[in-house]
Amino acid sequence: MAKGNIMAQIYGYIVCLVTILVFLFGLPGLVKAIINISDIDYACGAPSVLTESYEKWRVEFVNNLRDKYDHDEEKGRIVEVPKESELKKIYESEKINSRRYFKVRVIQDLIENILLVFVSLALFLFHWKWLRNHAPKKAK
Image 1 (cartoon, rainbow, N blue to C red):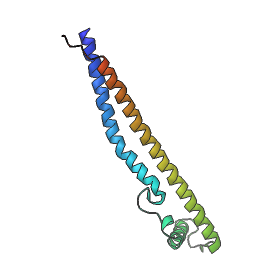
Image 2: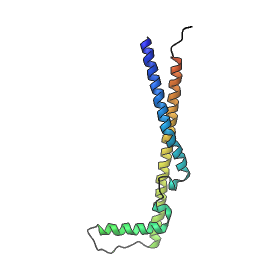
Image 3: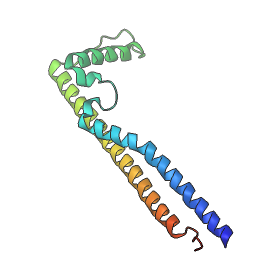
Image 4: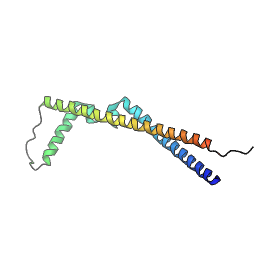
């Protein structure tokens, strides 16, 4: 019976140690996700061309369009740049889609880290209480 009790205690302490490590590694991710949710535009690193300005995005868009035709089999073809009003519609659409993507990603990170921290905390508390109940009784 004593060997089974020792094995149960070893199991309990190992689980408690692992849950503490998971908690400690999950906490910085939770803090980062909370900070990122406050400013979605800068949440995923350096600001993109979309968040800086329309003019920078336009130059990048036209350069990418030209590069596409330079590598195409119709090399030397004249590149037709869309009208300014169409470019602004494309820019706004891409900006909205980009924000939505990053917002979903930041919320996903937040939920994952909340779950990680709280599940590890719950497992730790459960096993710690279980260990206290199964501790060997001291002789009086």
